[in-house]
Image (cartoon, rainbow, N blue to C red):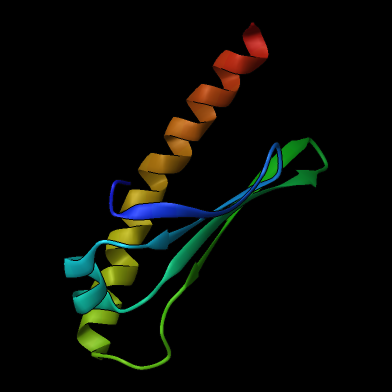
Length: 89
C-alpha cells in the first residue's frame, strides 16, 4: 500500500486511497480505491470500488483489474482479522 495515500477517511465507515507512486501512475494512470463498510442483515459487508481512468491500454487495464482482485482478497482477509481482533478486546 506504499504506492497509495489516503484521499478520504470516515472512521468506522470508509477509506479511500489514491495512487501516488510516479512509476505506477505512468503505467496505470490515476486511480483510486475505496473500501466501505455497510450494514448487512448479519453484521456488515465490505464493498470495494476501484475507479480507473476511462482511457488507456486495455491489456494493462485488464491485468490491473485481475491483479487488484488478488490484492483485494488479501486486504479483505487482513481487515477481517483486524476486525475480529478488535471485536474480541
